[in-house]
Length: 72
Image (cartoon, rainbow, N blue to C red):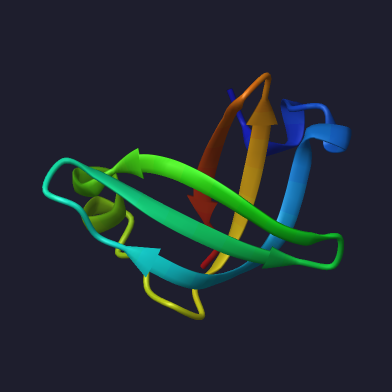
């Protein structure tokens, strides 16, 4: 599935504003024009995506889950 195939109402473009790294799960806050979106993601995913404060991302919302995709 590509990013463009996801319903745009469920996407929030923004920048990582805060990361709280945990041993297994990390908290990532994304600042968007609509406000802050917070995601709980695996610490491994944070590392594999090389997320840092200031990284441009898209937060995808499905029910109560928020996924993050890094924009290059």
